[in-house]
Amino acid sequence: MATLNYMTEEGYKKLMEEINRLESVERPKISRQIAEARDKGDLSENAEYDAVREAQGLLELKIAQLKTTVSNVRIIDESHMGDGGIQILSKVTIKNVKTSQKMTYTLVSEAEANIREFKMAISTPIAKSLIGKKKGDHVTVEAPSGIIEFEILETGF
Image (tube, rainbow, N blue to C red; front, side, top):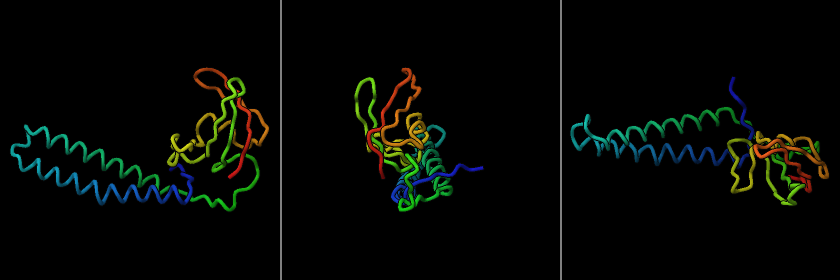
């Protein structure tokens, strides 16, 4: 059974744009490179041809993976998000109790996670510990470096 991928409308559109770019720009570019390498003669000794064919295989694999993700997407209607505590799409500010370091993340699906944009995958240990909690709650997370305690400072959408 395929895993459902919950994402926002924006995340879904980005995924579809990436698939479109790969199919309409990258695929034809690799096809041209294969044709050019093929024109250079004996394919059995043509390293350029082998490299481009390998790149083509990787591109097709990426396209297939993205299409599988898209085929199992369920769009989250942000207007129906309740106040039952922290959940997917919640924006959360937490403080490391020991170091007093504050961090703000939006909890998103695996496909939308991007730490540079402060979007944390819902499946991470920190995100899992936050689900259902509310402002003021304390959570503990088991990390490779040991147990970390966080205080939830703010939540919202």
